Image (cartoon, rainbow, N blue to C red):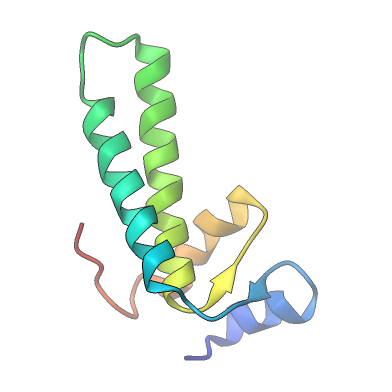
Length: 93
């Protein structure tokens, strides 16, 4: 599946294309779910809970990006790419 805005980022070297791998996708979903669950643990410091929630969001956003065959080395691009991949398929965690 080609997404023009993301393909433009590939063209200028900000994203890479790479065939999606089911095992990587499943691992990212699993990681995101575990971290999100752990972020709800009130016995952990607020700072740690924030870190867990942020990393859960990144893992889930990266899963969506990888689902469409793209990869990024930059966290901010992973989050920004959600605008383009999020409406394509609803991912249920």
